[in-house]
Image (tube, rainbow, N blue to C red; front, side, top):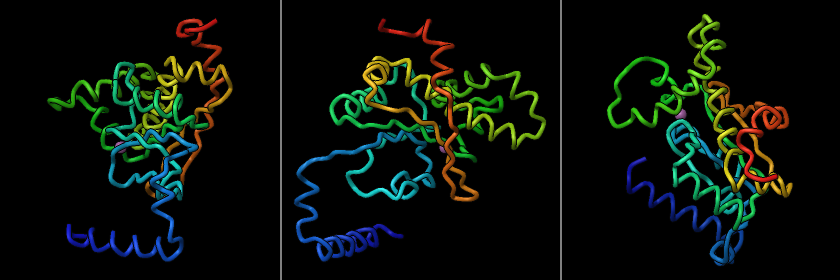
Length: 209
Ligand code: CO
C-alpha cells in the first residue's frame, strides 16, 4: 500500500466505524481500559492487534527487537509501570515469534555495530542455556528453542521488577509467555511454570517479605 493509500484506507475505516456506532470516536477519546499489556517483537509480521483479534482500547503494547525486557531499559520499564499501576492491566504477556531476525543474528558470531549491546541480551540467554541448546543438533530446532527460552528469560526479567512483584503479591496480575508461529499463524502458550521459577529464584530477587 502506498502512502496515499493509507489515508484513503483510514477514511474508509472512519466511515465504517461511524456507520456501526456514530459515537465510536467520542467514546474512544474518553479514555482507555486495556486488560492486557503485550510485549512483542517489532517485526512487521507480528502485529499484536491482529494476532489477538483486539480492538482499539483492548491492548497496551510495547514492541522492540526480539521482545526484550532489559533490567535497565527505561522505555519498557515505564510501559510496565504505567500499565500495571495506573491502567491496572490484569495480564502481562511476553510474546516472541519463530523466525525472529534478532534471535537469529544473536546466534552467530558477528559484529552488528550499534546493535551489539541490544543483541547481547539474547546472547546472555544463549549462554545461560548453552548446554541445552548445544545438545540440539538441528540448527532450526535450536533457533526455535532459543526463541522460546528468550521469552522465558524476559518473563523472568519481568518478575524481577518491583512493579510486577508487587502486583503478583497483590494477586492482581498474571504473567504469560507466548510464541507466535509465523508458519502456521498460531499463537502458542509456552505454559511457563512461574511458581517453580519463583521457588528457584526469588531468594535472590525478592524485594518484599
Ligand atoms: Co523478531
